[in-house]
Length: 324
Image 1 (cartoon, rainbow, N blue to C red):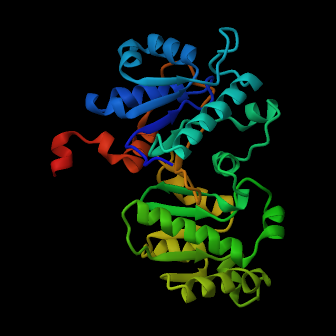
Image 2 (image 1 turned 90 degrees about the vertical axis):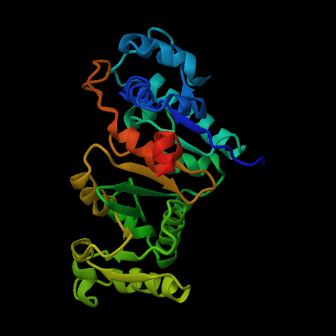
C-alpha cells in the first residue's frame, strides 16, 4: 500500500439530507489553499445543483469530486427519505473508505446518513463503524464509535442495539478491544498517554454485585486486563461519578446512551463521531440529516468544521495559525 497523503475524503452522506449543503458551506470557510487537499465523494448532480442553489458554484471548480452514488434528477429530492438516497450514501462512503485503504487519503469525513433510507435500500447497516468494518474486512465488533465534543472523548463498547442484545454479547474482551481502540485514537489525536475511565454497567458499577452480577463478570476483569497491559485505567465506576471528576482524557461507555447523552448535552450540534479500530480513520458529525430543513439553506456547518479541525487541523488553519 502506498503511503497516505494529506488528502481528506469528504463523503456527502444522504444526498437528500443536509450533507451536501453543510459540505459546501464548510469548504467555503476553509482557506483557499486547503481546497486542493479535499476530494468529495458523492453524486456530481447533487453537488452541482446544491452549489448553484447556495451561490457557491465557484467551489465546484476548486474541489475535486469523485462522482459516485449517482441519483437521477427525479430522485434528488431534499427532505425526502428514499432507498435511492440511502444507497447513494453507502456507495459514496464506501468509495472514500476504499480510497483511504489504497493509501490515496489520510482519512475520511462522512456527512450524515439516514438509517431508514439505507434499510429501505435493503442494505444491512448499523452506523458508519459497521460500514468501515465491512469494507475493511473486519468483524463489526472490531470497529467502535468514539464521540468527541464538549471537552469529552467517549468510546462506545456497544452501539445501535437493544440493551438486552448488548448485554448478551458483552464480555471483558470486547470492553478491552474498545478501550484499546479509544486509546490509540487519542494517541493519534495528540494525547500520548491518556488517562482512561471505564463506566460500570449497572448503577454505581453494581456496588459489588448488589445491583447485579454484570460488572463482576465483565467490566472488573476488563479493567484488570487493561491495567496488567500497562494502561492508565480507572474503574469500573458509575459514569456520573467519573464525568463529575473531570480527571480523564477518555471515557469508555458500555451502551449507546451512556456516551451519547453527555456529549450531546455539551455539544448538541458540534460533536464529531469517529469510527475507530480499523486501519481507516473515518469521522462523521454528531448530528443527523435534518430532513426538515434539507434544501432550505438553513443548515449550520459548524459540526462539520469542528470535525475537519479535529481530523485535519492542517486544512482549517491559515499559514499564520500554523506558525503559532
